[in-house]
Length: 301
Image 1 (cartoon, rainbow, N blue to C red):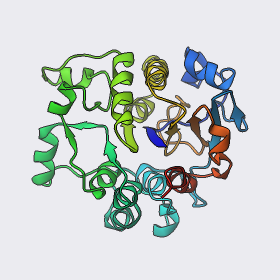
Image 2: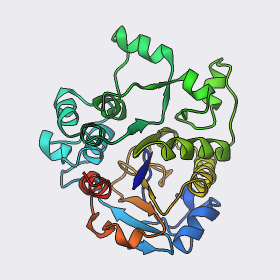
Image 3: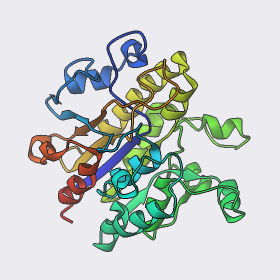
Image 4: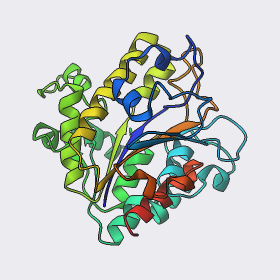
């Protein structure tokens, strides 16, 4: 069994109405998977022929609005990070969360048990330079990737189709002056599926959803939903969904309510795609805490 975990930052389950960009977005792949336009806050568990959507708690039993550092640490360790530190922490993980990651990271655990793991995202050299000069800090996903002992992927890997950038089209890199090919969502989906086929566990992070949610840009938010649908559709088409589980996860809500500049208290969708998903034990998932144990069981670890 292989697992591709596709992380979508700030991807919550909102209301049916004009404040929710998903309400207006055309998402034929998600609709086909789930038997309709079903990514709403009033949905219960939604099951299709080869996919299930589980509304998942991101509040973690801690007062306040869910935030990225604690939500992602919880998602990728199975430890309730917000309860461990007594609050929700935004942005970059402090030392207390880094310690949890170093002990319990899903990628560290899997690598330690002989599984082939990878973080699909490409990094710019400028990023490494800024971190070395202490002018930038590692995100939670980067700490998780580094905990495995595997090297981070670079722009050179991206040029060889052996990595995917955070916006997956490479448009951000081109705007910054990089000589890289602009990709369609479909091309990016093919590249991600190819990487996933070479590893037992692959993690990919998409960050643009959270950024555009904070910007409260309805047109771009609709575009995000539609491009994700296209990218993930092609990725799924290029996976062997009998021996690979594609799992879409998030850390907190945001994009689904364009009237709010902050994160939301909404549940997030955990979407599991596999021809035999009914046999994977998905019923155990109710909170971000449950995702890592679920994946470790899938991979026999």
